[in-house]
Image (tube, helix red, strand yellow):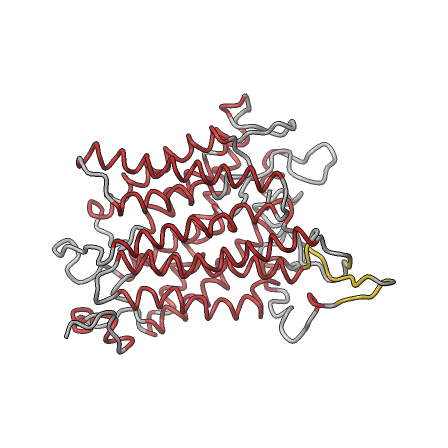
Length: 453
């Protein structure tokens, strides 16, 4: 699983990279990078016609700023050694500019006729950086869907940089960099259930294969906090906000599904049987979630909608992300069906509770991300004697540790996001009522998506 292989930033481990694995991770990184423009189409289609460009620009702008800061300090914060070692939460800030001004990940050494490079596992460390950069970009961009039509573009970009620095990078360090939520001897799992027989890891290891906590719970919780602080769109509860371009929505969902194979199968960090299992699990869970969502629509409304199908796809992809390396295909189908049903039901809560999650980031990413993370306590399959889920004869321990890591992610993200949102208030979160009425595309970007003349 990713949590077992994503370790501290290597600075002196030279070797020959595996060509097949390197090619696969480069391809996976490209697939994951495609997911952010795909998200732009998905969110843009769900928006109204006068705000589609702004919605897409929030994704593209995120690619710009996070692509830069990840190289400057994000990677070293996520995977570098802390002041007290890998398990120290705040140690990620000990040398945040560890990559700035250096070429340490691109160093080479000639040994005989072979050129050796700095490695992360069996791939060059710079390739691992490329792969992780794309995760950081999409994680921040996901939040933007909750803020459609009402947020200053400049403030959004400032938030993206600060949130990635204070929330995403430290949480990635905690889960994947050997920190508090990993299988580290100093992690929470080891403190709760003790070390394994060798004394070098947790007896029951937290599972987050490709980003249930780091990506989806994190982004979904941030979205919830921001909409509560920033407030609803003008006319929320009185105006019908209909998607302006459903083909865009379905195109975006299709490209997200395609890119997600890089997201999940690439997280095996090798072109091997594990990646193949993850591919299959990702496919069947997503298919099942789409059918679960459509079933809810049919029972409730007697209609199976295109937007529902696309949203079900995303809910399934979200739910299977933390679990895809530790399920059977049948378990993945069960996980997917439940994810589709839960997310379809969850999106109706915003009108009942009065929070304006514009494009259902909370209902899809937070809810499905929580389900996918916690469901491992029931559905984890462990053929090699590791702790399986309750449905496969395991005990309560895996479920407990999955609840713990989900809870810590929710609390950490919620508190830090609220602080960031309040600190950025003087910069100006909201556009004016007049600008919102005119349309954020015209007022923020001096453009319109469509020429109606």
